[in-house]
Image 1 (tube, rainbow, N blue to C red):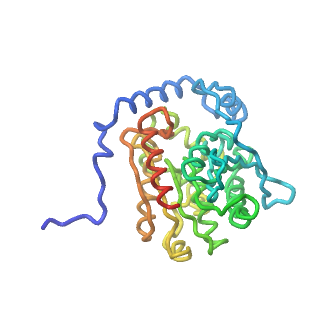
Image 2 (cartoon, rainbow, N blue to C red):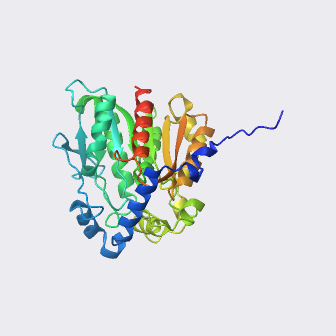
Image 3 (spheres, rainbow, N blue to C red):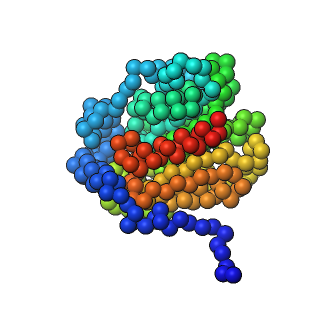
Amino acid sequence: MPLTSDITINYAKFDPNNTTEDTKKYNDFLEKTTSSTPKWYEVGAPRFREMIEAGEIGGLKPAQLPEAEEIKIPSREPGRDIPVRVYKPDNGKPSKGIMLHIHGGGYTLGSHTHVDGLLKFYANTCQVTAMSVGYRLAPEHPWPAAREDSIDVAEHLVDHGASQHGGDLLFMSGESGGANLAVVAAFALIRSRPAHALRGLVLPYGNYTLALGLPSMESYDRPVLVNHEIIRSFMDAYTPGWTPQERRNPLLSPLFEDLRALAAAAPGRKLPPALFLCGTNDPLLDDTLLMGVKWQATGSEAVIKIFPGAPHVFNVPHIDVGRESFAYEAEFLLGKM
């Protein structure tokens, strides 16, 4: 009998020949848009955010749904509240709990008001109250501002979700930099609220180390929304003047956490079940592969789904891989209800 590997990979998911025409067209669209748009650091973060709001990036304004509500949750700083977007199930039936989403944008761009469609998907798919955190952005507010805001909202929902918001905190999600913040907040809950067990995390194309240096990021120079130059600019804005060694701080870069020790301190001695999703044409691919395998190595559940040729930010409803990713998310979440 031939020797078998303890870790196996579905090579078909990494084979460029399995990239669909639909995915190739989406890559080309993103590359054209990125190449024809000023870089955020060329015009400054405030101006670039205005361009996003005005629909000058990609030709689409962020959709805001009238059913979404805005609330405020107190921060750890007296007198300062954190804005939170809320979307409740459309059918009017009682919510079964809360799903907390943390948006992406390189810790610098994006808004909690830009993900109403995603909140609606989560709310109606799982019959939950879906929320999005309006955390403070770099460079105006470098680390640990985004981390603290994300943790503050998560801890508030553990402490007061049932009494003030109609249910317990069940799930957390986040894409790109938001996945980092979701994981960081989940790990903080293990330490500060050890009796609370999250039912699951949904983590598309996450950034789990800000120390840079992973091959998929360093070798990626094609301007398909992000590349190594753009990612480096986000890291510098969020952690200005930090050395690579300083950026290995596990409170910033959860890839460097002692996951085995965290799992031992968590309910059931396991990390929360996690769904990792990433495309092979994403400079953060290595982040997902390493974090997902390390998660599994603790004996915790980690489902890793890979999408051939998909770029960063592929989970959009108008392309095939986006619809496929939403189907996986729904299956994962409903399996934990």
